[in-house]
Amino acid sequence: MSSVPENIELNTLNKLVETIQDVQNGLDPNILCTWYEILEAESKALCPTDELRSSIAVIQNADLPMKFEFKSSKRAIPYVIDAIENNLNSMPFATRLYFQKFEEIIEGELRAYLGNMRG
Image (cartoon, rainbow, N blue to C red; front, side, top):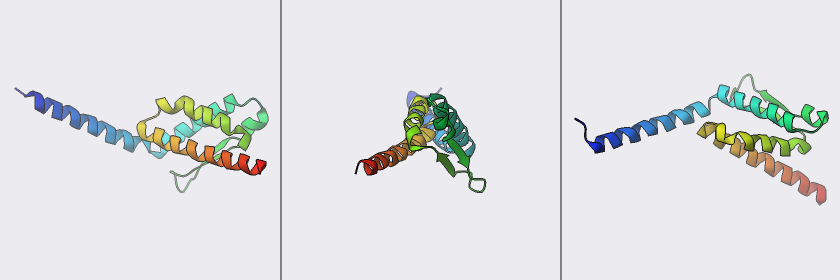
């Protein structure tokens, strides 16, 4: 016979273990690569011209599998951001945080580029 506090404690520990596993899995290079490929494909699908589509490419570093290069013209960045936003809720927690930070960085680069063009 188990008491209610033990069940609550066990449930809490199980949820904590799941969260830790999700974080570990979400930052696996293969999972990141898969999401980069999804975002690349969706970004290209959102682009209205072949020129913009051809500017988008993801390159995973062969020696450092956690390092990715996401190439895109400045004009394609809004489509990349849309693709990220469309997929965030489907990503594991840690992957979502990773791509939210990626989105923040590319938005900052776009703002800086547009600011330099105006000034």
